[in-house]
Picture: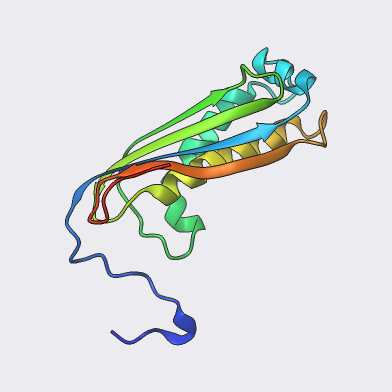
Length: 151
């Protein structure tokens, strides 16, 4: 098939084998110790930031193909998002996504941690304008024809 104008096209995955695909991604939100304490103890005006961030991550993973233009819609089997506020200066976020499909779920895992991090930022921005979102990255993926990847 010839390339589309401007080089944009959704990749044809029809001939790829269906297999169990998993991906795990992570992100960090750096914040002041008082902000982290308030996240941990649920003392934010908007409510429980950890539960809200987890839900945002799950919802984002399910909508990846609506947000990232050339991603295929996938029937996700599970999305797990963990938010850990035990450090004094950062919240760590991890997402694991699984699907039995013809293409990987890396983008779903990456979008899950990104949305969770943005949700934490939104819930805390009134008390900590100096927060930063860092280290959004794929930690590992399994399944598919190109094999496994572990950072």
